[in-house]
Image 1 (cartoon, rainbow, N blue to C red):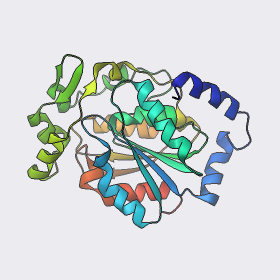
Image 2: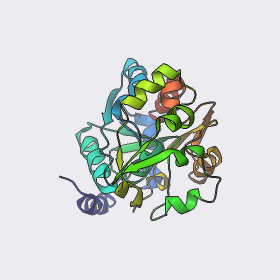
Image 3: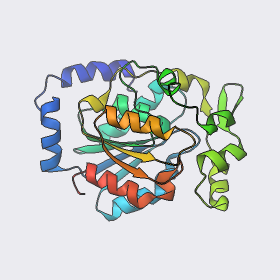
Length: 257
């Protein structure tokens, strides 16, 4: 299994290869585009949360894979994503929602990744403590709804419906709540060792009605990375409530927008 240590060593070698440097990334993606899309989900969800976005990307002729984030540790989540990236046959857009912005930021330095898309997602710098960064902005309401059973965390039903999926029909939100995957406490302690957005073209979708990550924190991270940014009047789950806008941003990152 690929782990973060072997991945880091491989990146060191890749950095010596032509085309790995920042100066070439934007021009390369503009000329060649990307036919592969890899999507990564965050907390309180599974890979199926991307279904409406996947359908639109497939209709555009793209090869799409949704990673099943194990929600255990950052190292294991990155390793799972790297395995999927290794299987791609060319330039690939790596997309992350919510917590998986941590994964995109770390795994996005993979040489097959041509662009990054963050959907209401964390976007730390290398070695940055995201929790400390987040505390410089008002705490979003969903944080109070996280409960733990031993080392496994999840959102209460009330917090899920109100603060995570607030703009979805209640019946649909309840279905998503029923499929919620618990995360391991250790997942929250991981820190990135790379910041892929420093060397790859980046795109960001801010959710203006977000109650899970503060929208102003999202704007700060998007501005800091110099991302092409859109704002969507949405809850944290814009990928479900506004799949057309999110798919459109991914298509732009793939050179088709």
